Image (cartoon, rainbow, N blue to C red; front, side):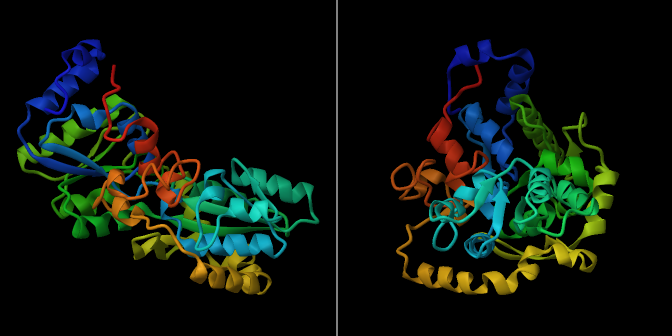
Length: 372
């Protein structure tokens, strides 16, 4: 065992203590990948890796939406801002490097870039300031898509449009199952509240135990226990370890809105490449709100300048792609904690509170125990 501190177990709540004892008693070897930035935050914050036995390994997959947003989409957002549009997005997204700079860099250079907390804030700005051409840079997984769909269904003003860079997680997990040495998966609880547990069943049919988990330390420990039980029984299924929120069918109302506004497409995942069926684009009926098409003539020159600048830039080597696919740890990156910190991120995994590099830097370089 990596941590023999008996005082830790004595100070733990009874449920966590029993769950951990069950895990430590199992001799089954299991390499588990979670695909959720909030799961990584919990694992790092409470040092769960440090109290797991050596036969149990939990690695991080591409569960951070900011981290997988491709440079191309960031570049388009920056080009729009430099061409006169008012680009609004979440705070973390403003700091993610594009091919040459970030939205925050563009703002420092005079572009109109603003932080909002939701797409509704962006629509409100467009209503209040009809002289502005407001573009909401919408990123994220299935969790954030229903809100974007709902905003478009409410018929926002003409000076509002959406630059969509949204992903669907099951196709990406399916790709990792064939490309990465993993035995089992912890599926993202937030995503499952929308899509349910059924979209993860193809993984189980391929022989991978799956559990949908919540976000407290006890939820993660319960999830590991459920996966161990499957492995010990020699079965593979989808267990719902988050039944207080997640239903097998998901949220039918949210899914209906998503399907009405968006359709499935191929999508690029930063550092991973194009994944078939993993993207969401606006349906033809909503194309007039697609910023990438509505303003293509406006930003094309600025985008060319950005790409020319990127070719001349001496980029710091970033291994975020290997980290996102479970092939490397943040501490293996030559920039980690040196040329790459949360204050000065060289890559997207150090930007967001859901990024693995950020959490390793913030809480511990190797995940020291904090369960007490």
